[in-house]
Image 1 (cartoon, one colour):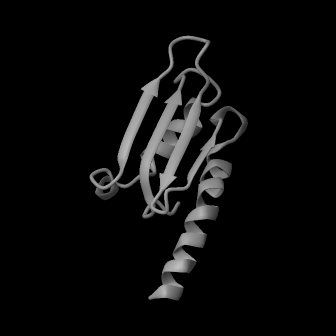
Image 2 (cartoon, one colour):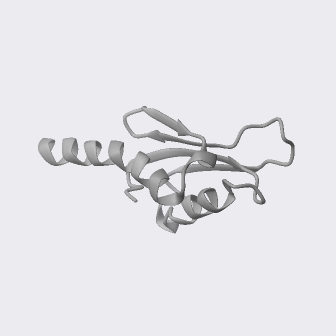
Image 3 (cartoon, one colour):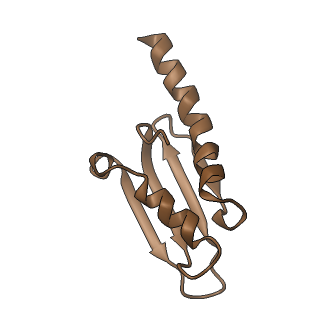
Length: 95
C-alpha cells in the first residue's frame, strides 16, 4: 500500500466486529516512518450506534472514506491505492 501521500488517517472500528481485522491490518500497514508525518487518529467503538470508518486525507487535500465492514484488507488497500497511484504519476510527470 502506498502510504507516502497520506496526511491524516482516521480509523474507527469494533475490535470484535467483522471490520476489526481489516482495520487492524490497515493501521499496521502504515510504516513507523510515516507516523511522524501523518496524523493517525484511531478509536475503538464500544457502542452499536457509531459506524465503523476508515478515512484518509491525502496531500492534495482529497478525502476518501469507506466502511471497513463491507471490505477485506486487500480491497481496502486497493481502494486507497488508486488515488495514491494517480498522485505518484502526477509527481513523476512534474519531476
